[in-house]
Image 1 (cartoon, rainbow, N blue to C red):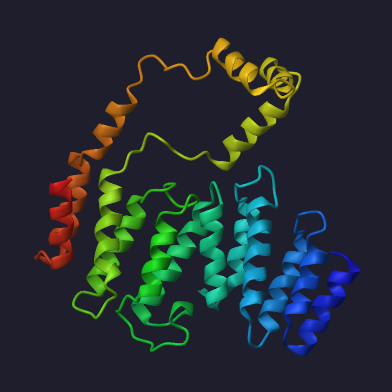
Image 2: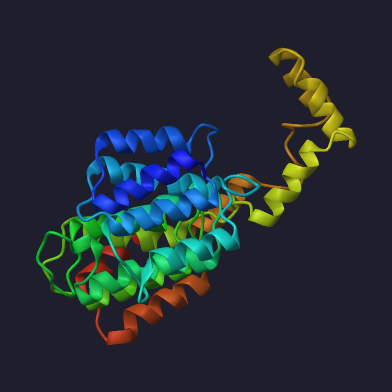
Length: 313
């Protein structure tokens, strides 16, 4: 952290406020090399805690800077490390709760930007969203009436972003754990004055879990690191190959890929067949669904909507 950045942060903290000009100065001081270091990330969090009335400019800077640090602060870039995930969870958590809407936005944005994230971070974000719906307390209700057991439009948006995030349980898809959360929220808010978007989100989310294709999975951080190290290793045959190809034109590069077998259909793998089989609801998935529908001894309107969706599909 530069002395200039430290001085700017200290001045803003003393005033409990920060102007647009000071935010611009912080941006210039923090990002001369395109990176946010751990000391700068810690200072930004401390400053956020001390600002009495955060502005839109500050919230944008706060989220942008810390997403860069958490997601790209360690190698391989794009994969959140256990250390960064633990730091973020501890930093935003006050007695086990996320303290502000800006911090909740940060958590969800990290999942959206990351190629992968540790289980603990994903679970923490889902727990915070579920807690807010059930208790009527939390950052998504700021500025509005606090009412437990009601799902607001803001919460629908956060839930959708979190469960379909690339760094979520199942990249760009809904996992069993996330589908079970949707069922719990549905049961807890039946008959409430929920946002119109809730029924569609419930049906699409659970339907995605039951019918989603599992053939394309995101890389875990450890595997991504191994592949990155391999591709950067100019001593290996393939590493030298890509090093040479980087110096050729696009046409030669594509032809060279074909010559070594890239882009050819792999024998014995029927991608369309795999997707079709995953799209069909399996016996195990059907048992899972029936157990949740039978849990209260009745079928409610949202469950009926889900069953209609599955039948039509």
